[in-house]
Length: 269
Image (tube, rainbow, N blue to C red; front, side, top):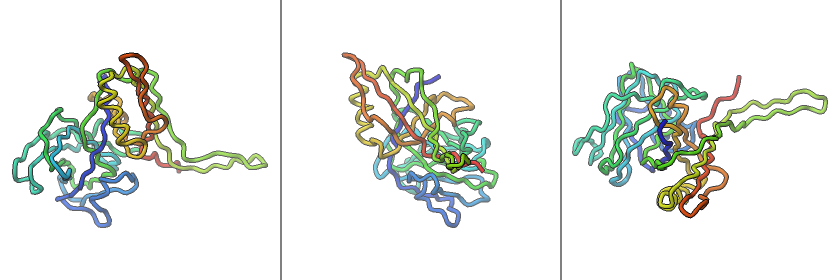
């Protein structure tokens, strides 16, 4: 088991040089609405997803959420360059790696693409993600999150809470008849990091909370170690509850992270 990591998705402008299906927009991969997706043209062996960060920035992580009908046969390459045409200063950071985080899909059935590169990669404005081995299948992406991983020295404490936010309801009429409103469900996660160092609290956790609060989503991967179940361990969601850190001892802080995932589990038939 590896320590969990958190990432704040950076803002970016996307473009798809391999084309977009009619009725879809490239900008969908940069918003937080899981029901608004981007879809590529079919009939291709690979598609290219390119992002403009607006300035030179070093990133080391990218996750693709809401990848409907993604296949475990897909692979991925990662490149960066100093210009939008990707013909100056081109560097390849990964090639032929599995696109999906693991072979077992989350309960919502929508794939999670995953790349975690070396920490401290050169700062570049333009980054390209090549999704390959498609066998002519179209690619669907609800949200691309890119940024830098934040990994604390000490992992979360056991007693983590994994649950579901039920958006439906069940009740009974005055005559005792079941009244049921089926709706989507959202995965929930509650973790406590009880042994955060003072410098980590002041330089990593608290600045993150002050940037995103509960308004912007974060990525949280509970265990980034390679595993068939790693897709299930990847969350994209908003923090809820107490948004801060607790100074527990003279040299120790605590952070309790409670999150609601943005990718819905469809309602029952």
